[in-house]
Image (cartoon, rainbow over all chains, first blue to last red):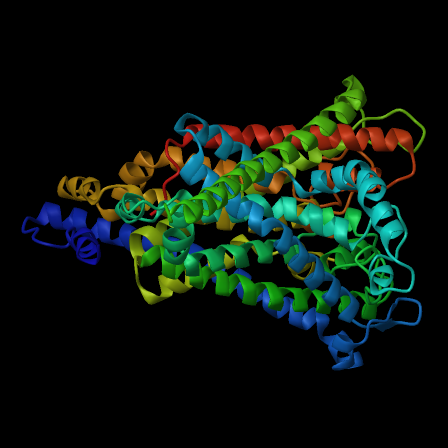
Length: 330
Length: 282
């Protein structure tokens, strides 16, 4: 590839003895330089955007870090009236919803990917694959409305109430399932999130499974393995690091997802103690309060929350890309 | 027949596993159908001529979504124009000039990170970058946020489709005496334009439903306005506001708007999928 590139870029300057040809080449070189510089500038703009993102979040959030120090990360108190802000409630809410969503989505995403690669009739592969991708295409605000007006009432009636009734008084179950039975809580938010990240994980897994050379799988089948055994002992080990990357990619999505969660999580500050309690994530807090933030410190605290979210997602996404990249280039 | 027992357990686990895979796909399809179904059921009722001809109403009065639709279209158009220019050039640089160089790898990696970065953070960034210095929310700030979301998608697809073009194509063009810039623009881009269009469509599908970054960049506007330098109404934010309101007619409009957006996004996604033959990446 590199050698080819060299021939392409150098050939205009190579052997051109005639004056006329040399004139054209010189002009070509100028345009070539300009064009390359233009493309280079565009690429650098990307880098600048990401750098600017970090810098602007750090500058904007600085007053909050200065005012509360390390306490900002520990305290769960979020009180715009007293001007006291602590991030831990939102951080925990973010991590818990994302982790639960991942837990729910993972087996299903894996099942879908295997279905599409191994089981699906070839003629149905394209339509079903597209349908799963459509699930990823639905805007997050539509998920939010559907979650709040359709899913939450159903969830309250058929899951939350029975679970609360079944919990023996005084047990840990009762604490874990305490809450207002309106369907807007951490668990239902996680379920909506799970549906939203499902197609992303499934699509990446499918791509990875397609990278396995057919000969490898076929030899396992040839030895008499069942599909389950081929998947478990050949396919999964083959794509392992990439699969972890796909999972991290889904996790990154779940951590930063905003609108759907804002609709359905109930938006209550503080430390969540029950899976049926209303909560808040970093993204939902920013979405709810930023446009109406009362004071300088309120705005700064929200931006500081944003910086925390950025650091968490950046770490997760970077890890995901490294793992997937290694797989794809192997 | 001592092999009878393990064979049965193998068959059982095989059956259970396959059944689960079928069921998982079924669950995903059911979720898709359930969402679309309730969207249609609730959205069709609110859909009438007023939606496209009148601006967002005060609670209790008649109105539509005209200003929001117009605002969304304007912001998306500006965002796509900017994002396509930057995205295509950056993608070209990655595929044609950077190749496997170190800086290229860094840019590619950061682009992938930006691709899945939370959109609300892009909103915060643009707020700090444009809204705060200019002392006011504006449609341009909204368009900027949308552009920043669209660029990584375009960069990625552009690079992918350009890399698929055979080297012999480039060599043929250069052998005819065309300089590299001309080869790239007139031959390589031309050959790859279908794939690049798909990338632009996917980027458009992504930004047209985005709400979070618009909440505090373009804000909202109750009135019909063509001025992007002022706060600009847009469909997603109006839906967000109206859906969480206590008024029935506002909620009806929110459902109608949600259906419009979802239809537009899904239609664009399907078109983009149909225009690509085989979704194969390098």
